[in-house]
Length: 382
Image 1 (tube, one colour):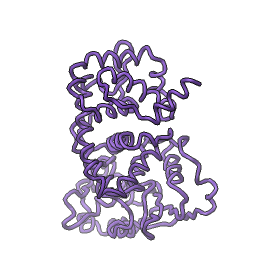
Image 2 (cartoon, one colour; image 1 turned 90 degrees about the horizontal axis):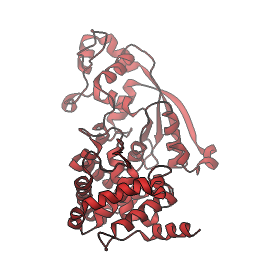
Image 3 (cartoon, one colour; image 1 turned 30 degrees about the vertical axis):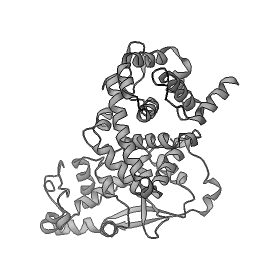
């Protein structure tokens, strides 16, 4: 959330340039077709709106009803190209409704409206059957806020969180997807959707529009490869992971793909040990919590993915499960490390070290991250 962001942009706020402009629907469609507004086709598979909600937006534009503004930030890598900070679903809806020709396969047909006149209409039908409404639609203005010369990613994250205050709580992974594009991010997107194991633990039947699956996979790669660089803040930790793998993709692609298979194998092992309905959940005396715990996910897949002794873990799965349940009830430090302020260095080192030491009883090759191990024993002494 916003409280976890660094305020590195505050001294440079006076350099930010923002202005409001009214773009017509026609001009926005033109910008989308030219690729000047970044609506990655991959994001469209993570559609948050159903057909009725999309249809209501188009209906509002046809009849000139007000809709919320969109917020765009100029892409620092390419002038005249924009990152969507707020309004992505509205722009996707416009793009899908106005698709024509060879790209019209998944175009939007209006449905679920109380106005039966519009139900069943496509963009082409609107033009031919109701030319006046069609022209009104194309000329309808949409207020847009443009941000230029923004000082840091955190500035855009801050705007993002404040715009979404009081509405659906969204994952910042959506914004990270736009800010950190590249082959690694594309691979993680594809992998998270293809992985049966990821779908099973998140109980997904289709891509998660909040991108929880992608963020979970990036967390795995971050800890697996850069755990000794962790300083107690997830956002830059995950951002840096994406940047490094995007930049060095040619050299690191083979490693990334190998570790992806090891992640699937680790998740499968966790399911075999704990059961598919209880894996990555905290034990509370008589039952497991219903909600998945990402802090538990981090430590289980970190050790199980890198271990070469998976058969040994399976042979001792009853003892491992009992040990985990014992920690969740009787070890107050472990309980705190998976329950509150889980991203700070104290709690992160605590759960990694305590669980790593527990697994060493079953596999003496288990290696605890040196940075976290040193920090943990240092605070223990003090």
